[in-house]
Amino acid sequence: MTKWLLRCTRCGLDSYLDVGFDLTMFGNIIYLYCPRCKSNTEHKVLGYIDDDTGEFIKFEDAVTEKFKSVSLF
Ligand SMILES: [Zn+2]
Image (cartoon, rainbow, N blue to C red; front, side, top):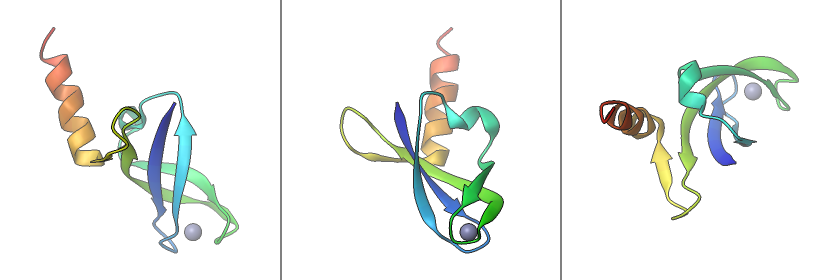
């Protein structure tokens, strides 16, 4: 599971989402329910928390990492 940090583009509320897949596959905008807006809104993917180090990885860096690993093959 990866803990992603998301921000509602309508009200700016930050929230975490635990998912077992790579959100960078969907680009940096996903639609989710926002409890403050009380509706489905656009959420910007800001980055994720690295499980091993507890470090925050920015979305841009996550994408760069992916391209790096892709180029190995
Ligand atoms: Zn919102």
